[in-house]
Length: 410
Image (cartoon, rainbow, N blue to C red; front, side, top):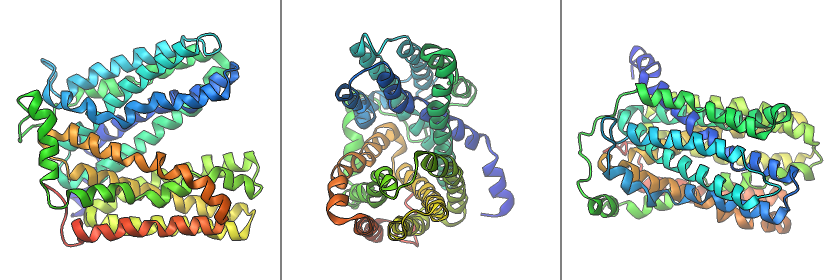
């Protein structure tokens, strides 16, 4: 893409919307996970109940159930995408305020109910935002748009995780959650002022069509099963390694201050840089080539933990490993997300993307479940080497449906 055209794309309205919508999607996530668990433990809730709170996140993994309704029905005067986004954004703000007014120490089950509504409206907002991004962006813009969405998502998560705890120390959790609800305002204003995306392929005309046709259309493709396998495997090694890094740092005798400073604070900018660089690369070389290059970099970055395991406690090496891992992970996630968007049929965007993104979360839960046992029996160096090799099956699947000479656009 010529440089003037690239700059026009980078600074377009569409990219700004992708960034802000990513922020709006990322902000609620921490409010029902780490922040809420911190509040509950502070109020004396037992660890067993806190552990069960992972179940309030089920709406994030079951998004494809409500997605057909969002593909089928439109909101009068606002449209199929903007209308639903506004409804869920206002409902999300209200549910966040309601969660902040609960009492974890006295009524933990009421907290669970309020948290469930936050995750339900947050997951529903995600479905519509993903569909809007796919329909608003041109095929060649999906890479950069997905990168900016992920960057915004990370900023939203950071604001919720750090900002809520900071505010709670000074104002209490009720006020902190109310302020976080107000922080959704940029997303609401963006929804109000951005245009409804075009629907050149039409929309489902019946609920039956909205429920059945997305799956019939997808599984009629020759590479349908291979693509699902790829989505499950492309980041599995990276995900398995990431799930055990926290105890790994402790075993190497890094202090909590060192972990917070290097892993959390120092490691955050490389994630944003990685997503931005990945998006720009995809504008120039396309999604297919990016999947190959970024997948290889992800594998190399996982191997960096093998080097750290052999070297032991070293702050400079930890910083180097974290920087490279976050940079490559940011690029890989951007390409991965853009690829999923690119293979959806625009008539059934919400349903097909919800299905694919739900599959994307399975390795985080299933494959990571046994990583503690593996690390215990194999040792850290061998464990991270195994995670590195787990990148190979996903890369090999690219040969079937993402050859370097052809982009997967419809």
